[in-house]
Length: 227
Image 1: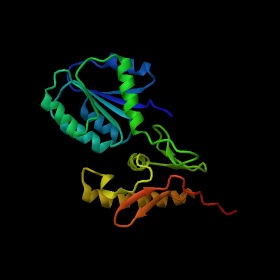
Image 2: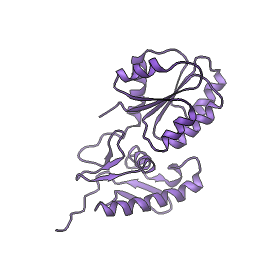
Image 3: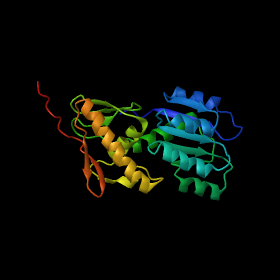
Image 4: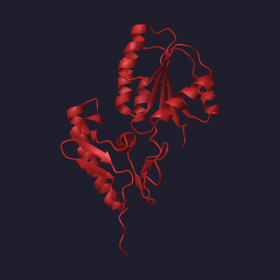
């Protein structure tokens, strides 16, 4: 299983990131440096990311972390700020940061930290063929060779289902920033996915549980096509 992936790095203060970015690339991470939090949030609208690293201190860090969580709910968020106070660290953790570092770490430590965090978020292995989203691709692959192209939001939807095998997820959990609106949005999203899947002659492996949410039918049988 591929553990490495795409990493976005943003500097929140005057610390230089050139060496950090180059060092991570040596460990086969695909790293992009962002000039500002605004650029980072902009990229998340059109690009997939596996991990985000915030380096240094800046204004409204908890608000930024919360915004990143909403934009990329299945990505890892790490914050490194050597001078952060205990209150600032607590606020960051409550906002949703996955890991905090107050010390300078070697590149091999960063590699291990990101790999470990990514490993926890990757869908668990299953026996036999199953539905899956491969690495950073925006494609849902099926046990019978099906391939359904996905948007960024659709990919996030399936990753949440894949990370909860056998579980029925409430509609509100897919868009936690606005649960009431999110419940309606996810119903629209699934409706559009079903229409798209039909165009590709694919039976969408998503079961709607009335009054509750959705469950992924991981080993859903492929419909036999008629000649």
